[in-house]
Image (tube, rainbow, N blue to C red; front, side, top):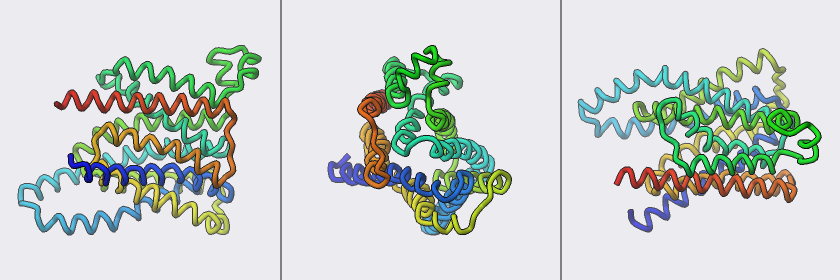
Length: 320
């Protein structure tokens, strides 16, 4: 791959990670004036709406060059979009709402790092569908758990609660647990994306995913919350950033950037999302991590980088 092309792809993916990371700030600010289902439902629908113009323009351009055989294959693939999009949308809805509710009890920076643990949940769940997990991934998982302990647990409270798993559950912040649940469901989400995107158009799948999640979340909004039009207006800026920038634009940039970037570098660049989230939270929300929490972030980030880099290199050798 040409060096200039590689640099272009790296820059695009770095911008993608920046948008995703700073979106945690938008989510935190939005939650100050509206409730979780309300925020998630509206931003998901905005994400779907942001992808529609891109899909329409792209399909119109591509239609001119499609052969009859390619057009027939496209029609077959499009028939799978609805069931795949509904499944993916339901999984995404659960994951994103766990994350959104975490903002009631935890901070943007901590939620971002804990959410990044989906990189360890993904290979674990992959075992159930016959995927092999490398030794380095297991090692990184252990270090990820150690990092989570430093990030989320007060050692004195942990000791007083009796230690062990029960002590962990009694000591850990409720929002951190919700972020951990989000990471677990995102692990399932990634496996679903891997399977479905190989058979259908990725951007259309994402659009249908956001639409499904938005409709479900808005339904839950009317069931369990009291939507406040004034609050929604006040949260319009954060909603637009999360919906249009994070869901719509950043997803498209990811697709473009990965075309020009080798897998190893792409994985590392996208891991920067959690770092950008902590920096943005410190800058805009004045969140400050303790020395212990910072150590947890460093351990987790190192484990994420190592696991993603090792996995990407292994895939590269397998394809060689």
